Length: 74
Image 1: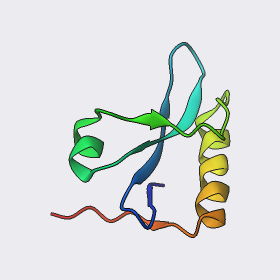
Image 2: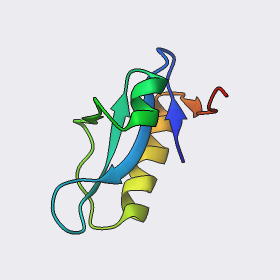
Image 3: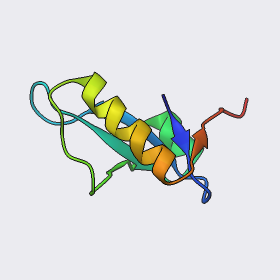
Image 4: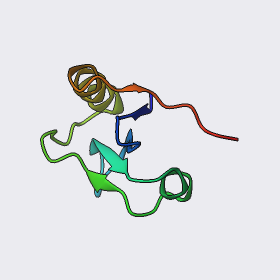
């Protein structure tokens, strides 16, 4: 699932460096999200060995920060 905070920043899970490393990342604009550039790891969340664990972390983080589900503008 992809989320958006009050500032418009977009949060998502992706693979990190190495094998079996997944984490929540964010971009500040929709263009950066679509281009997969200028993304930053969420510092308070750790790398996980499965995408499901990282997705759970992001889901909890999004709920705590009252984020909404991201809907792309077309």
